[in-house]
Length: 83
Image (cartoon, rainbow, N blue to C red; front, side, top):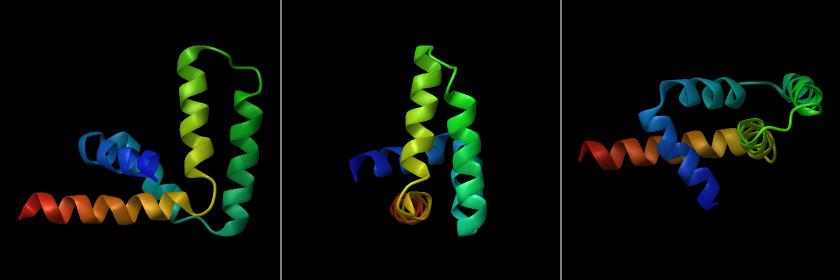
């Protein structure tokens, strides 16, 4: 849960991360499965520290509706910051 909150906070400051998470949160189950397969295939041959961090990010975001959960945390954080 803390990882999801950390990603939500990153979405506030990094538009690229927000765009990725938002796009994934809008995917259908079928699209999500296809994208997950592409991510796994892409990272199979990658082993730099940066690639490992990116893979970890995608792995978290792509499981258990986590992208949608991150968007919920994002909305909460944004509301709190507007007060």
